[in-house]
Length: 530
Image (cartoon, rainbow, N blue to C red):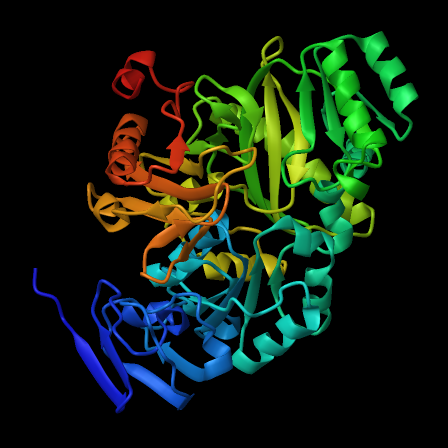
């Protein structure tokens, strides 16, 4: 296939080479390149350009180099207008800032970059994989915990939409501060984010508005909690009330295990203030599923269904993790069940939050248990952001203009909006550092990522915890490191493509589950990876 190149000699020390694959060659760090420039167009607008010399010592540019400290650059691709955006049918061009630096944020950048209404995507802090993929310009030095710094950046670069990925900035009030100064922000206020920030608050909303959930009690005294556990018996679930990085839930199969969980949280304080109260909850038996809805404060529209694998080991064994893989759609969530979830869980929550004076704007992620004995859904927990790794399979299937839809949510204009999804299925297999979710080594080298993405059509590797070493190699910096994602005509084809790509990656320091999707596929499909 012929490949078109456009070369721009803007100065003796700066050279751009672009093609429809997104290749960038420059003495300047490519973390600073606006990814959407390379979508097959050769028409560019460069209103301002200033730079200072950058010294490179490695054979590849350092992706984590600071783009703003050394260079000021604004360059927007010229795209064809999109009908139906903005008032009076005028087309609206958006510069988007994604907050976060994990696999979820990489998937969001990927979908936003493909949005016809999106002119540029920034990601703060981002990661090496996001930057090198060309899906966004990473801004590693922007302090996302400093609202004033984020606001200044948005004003400087004309950001028209901020998408907040992780829960911590939402709970701390970043969306409040941005909305207050008129910057459209997809993500709930701190008050509304309490649905995830406090499990006790979430349970109280369920009680008040008749939302089906597991029976529970809240305790701050260890002795009282243990007495209640003894009365209820095991198995039973112990949860830290606040944010605990996905590690604050213990499913205790025996009383002693439950007592130890209570002591670790209330006496030893392993989760700090997040564990100063615990929720003791009945154990629900059934199949878990993830349900996502976009919410504009009053209206909600469902996303496609997805299901993840929380346990670290094959067969859903071992300790809970942030998620070792996911697939979409999830057969367990039939159309009938999805309608029931909207009617009995999502919409009552949206209306309840509005009645409480803290309208929810963002994505509402309901962790569900489809009870074995009744076949009905119960709410396990709420998250107030896209799930990770579910976001990866959703974004690779989304065909609608994500930037346009998220802006509509910010404006309270979701009523009547519908989303388009690619047919078939998608699967993501998470590759994690050996030892995760416990202690693990950082800095292990990962190779053959480009070859892995080329093993089959519709394969995309989303980076969660990577950096570049001095030799230009990708290295692991986190627990969950890569989300190897693939689409297929059905779940079997998506699974085969994802695992073919995984097997191409050379990373002795990593591991992965070999049975993602086992609940939805015959066991014979997993024989080759046993």
